[in-house]
Length: 142
Length: 142
Length: 142
Length: 142
Image: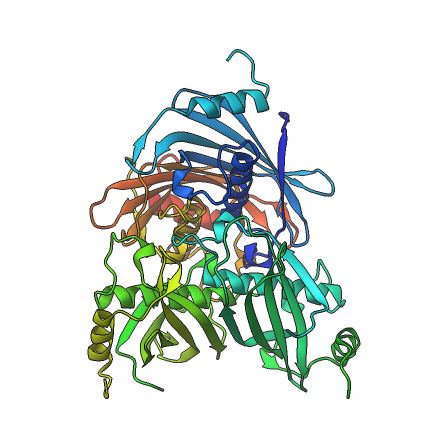
């Protein structure tokens, strides 16, 4: 498993479950999203109180691999890391773990593209973001 | 404000917000529901791992009064109390508070009716539940 | 049952159900909300493409009375009417009906307050809205 | 674009949008799921009124590629096809299209594994399902 330097805890809600009694598949993306927003806050790439339309990225692709059903009462944590940093896009990787046992319940990834929500155009990943990510993720070769 | 002996903390998720940037009205019921399930767990009226169709109550009525918009980043807690205990129904009251400032953001209530999910019929509130609620809420006159 | 001049059909989604196999209580508010936005569109009080922060009302109170569980496959329709029109607030009433049998499954209401999302202040219900609502609802005495 | 023989229309709800004003990424999975349940109903692999725990498949993997933001008012339809049919798993492909313009807004896929929800074990895709899918999708070589 790749190394994650950032984790965000999530409480599994009754409202996240579906008629099969498990965490509904769409909620995994909600959990990854919640970790993503907190990753941005943690690295200072987004500040509370700012408009969400100021976030300079948009999702291009997401993927989830389900390893084990998530039951109610199983509090979890989501790990996130940026594993690839290109000029106009970057790749985030996710892990969903049982918070108590550290058992991995799901993995995922997202391709994030630099985006200006005012002009609706793709833009390069801001240099300030690049520096923060490279430093936080201890990326080499940048 | 009535006295609440039970609180459950909730993290406001990005996925709980709507295009007006605030907590969406339907999510207040999700938050109350999450507090309700934990209230049942806390009093031993429901145990983790049990089927949710074993919970012997059904919602008859809910009400929410919105006092102030809930912003992202404003972690909250939900207070719940049983304020009325009838033969076949009971009334729960809720408060949604900012966890940091204790400012009340919303109040609510729910009428819960004893229900058998196998026969789809209303039933009396179980005697065991009555005793636990009376004791926990320090109700007098029962 | 009061007369409803506006109905909006809703498809019950698998994702709207909860572990008890029925429509989750919070989703009733989502259904009422969807009817409300379409009511505003229908009366020309809001236009597609406008920012939702331009809608000049905010929810002050909602109430739902559950009459019968909503099963998957039971397509429904939501009736909405404005039953009270005050200076700074108005009351909407809702009915949730089985689209096939017209059986009433839930009722509800909402208190809507005039609101300016830029200044975060309550405002009177706009005169233009008042006229449209009085005409549509065939209210007398205005 | 591959040929889709099955489409399901979806109304974009206000409650599906997020603070950036577009369809929230998690809702794409809800839309695909809704198409999937209706695909199963359409082919007779699942019947209304049956318990959802009788559905003999579980999700192993999902993927979404976002092509254009989905705005409110843009009613959509989801195409689904089974493109691969293995012994114990199969692959579904999805397209999300603007219902009016037929513009493709997203694509996706899901790996579905035969599953017994009573024993919590993977099982082969039932022979009856295989026959229905091969016939409906006009698969050759089976």
